[in-house]
Image 1 (tube, one colour):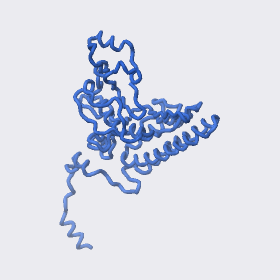
Image 2: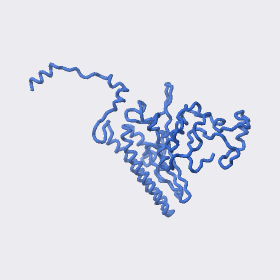
Image 3: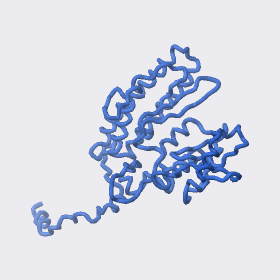
Image 4: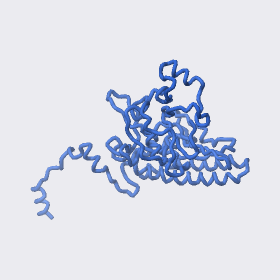
Length: 333
């Protein structure tokens, strides 16, 4: 189904197309067998609407809200609001539009932000609550446990291999913004459609062999380092992301006037600075936040709500008071 130029669409591990308009060849592209298979399997009756998702999808495969929460969350980030957060069965409940017109003109930055989202500021904020720990870590690792349950499925995800945002443009070369590893601690760098080579650090990404020549490993290293004090360390990450993604935008503008033979060099120089700076960041974070300290030298400890939740108040009592010894000490003084 065509996504209109002024619309956005969200697909999250599940089909989203609903009723097919077989008379609208401009907005729908479909196989000649789509009705034959649906009818032959007994899934659809001719003369009735063919809801592609209801007919051919298996629904949310991991748990309820595994796909729908991300659809809801992504639309929210992209300026499509007032959508329901709940439903019965997403396979049959067409609660979300296939495409929608946002309330504002979206940019590549909005897509960066969406890919980094953990539903902050909503009822499903993964940086809040006991599961996030005292320092607001929104990441939830996969479970292999006899305990029955599920985590929310965030949009940003710790086990991401890479994310890309593509800007297709008619007036100049198109740009692919590439972020290796998890988006929360990665940096989007621009790659030009006129380029003929990928920067060396972005050619190395073996997840089983750490390489300090690799952009993937630079960001993976940071993703694990920030866990010592997540909410504080991520401020440093955000500052570096903002700096270099802004510089990337300036590189893209400069590319419009660049000769073809200069494109690879400009992209590579920027990418090298990104990788160098992000490899330096873990050491800076270790210096600032190791052993529970904060960057100003103070040791703020844990928030009160978390201390109460983990039973801090039920720990060892104060030491016994020895009034007789205090009296002797006073006399001696």
